[in-house]
Length: 498
View 1 (tube, one colour):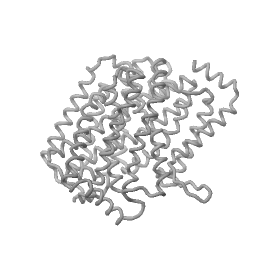
View 2 (spheres, rainbow, N blue to C red):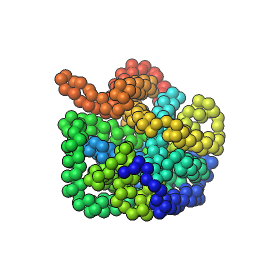
View 3 (tube, rainbow, N blue to C red):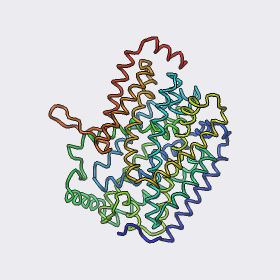
View 4 (cartoon, rainbow, N blue to C red):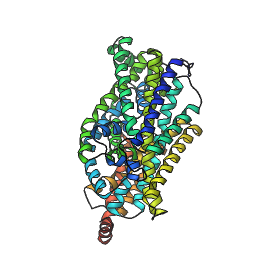
């Protein structure tokens, strides 16, 4: 199969039609659930008024992204069972959301917090720990936005269009309707996106196996392929992969709702009960993700061969489906990039404005100036991600996103532990964060920016997710430094928080 197919006019027409529909929806969103968009909580959190249904689509839309639809089947196609670690991770995460996030929502709502760093400042005071939380969120988010571009780039290439111009046009549109409508735009678009993705996936998992001789043939073909390939691949995990698989799932689950985009989705909910209900119903997306992952095995059974594993889903659809459906599927995946990219840019701009620019540069800025600054920063963030993809190799974005997961996990003690205990001081949490970031970065660099490190204990070797190793060091340092912090300082921090 050629790396680039000729342009299919039918598929391209369907793709453009649905993309145009989403563009119109994005600009109309400013009129939906009207609010004063010169206020940051209205622009950046949608006025905190999204009910269960809207929040379900919004959080699902920013958690299950275009890159998920592209990357999970690609990983399964390349390595087999190990690629399914995303399934237990998205199961583990929802009990955590149910238990923790409603409590965080209540504090944030009562005190007017818009970001996780706002919450940390409100509980512990000071500038530097909230600034560390904000910087971590922004840095971890930038390559994540870039990877949404990668997902869009892959499907556009699958339609036979080369070059960066279509990507630039798509993200110019995204930039302007996000600037105009704020969080309301991705919230409204998420309805369209999720319905389209469900149609695509259900059609794929029902029709493709029929064309390939059934699921038994799909699994037999994948098993034969991986046995011939050898190494650590296979449709079953190997014992040497158990600890890596489990720790990746756990670490990813703990990190998932520390990201600015998922935090923004939670804080935009209308109530703590809305957050709880969504933690109950969001696992429906995990079922969808499991079906998406199976596309990797289906591609093997269909005899799909691609230069890059990321191209496998567009190649599979292009081989087995009619042109109109190929265009529809490509539009669904591309729109799945727009929703999270918009929310990510909003979350990052909220952090920059509230927790870096205002406290460190312009403490007296008005609420209107705050919202205006956030809108401008959201444009800068998106264009930065676009330049990232155009100017640098895709692998660089992937590597940095893996590091981003390690980094974002290091704000977990500051955000979650402080909901339940006052034993940790801001000095201890800041020192723990610094140690976690340094150790996580160092271990990842030593492994060629791979997420797993082989830990030697006695005569045994346990491959573990680097983010969890760094988090363990973070917690130990936080605890020790907090014990050593004079009681006077901890009391002072409480008074500042009050």
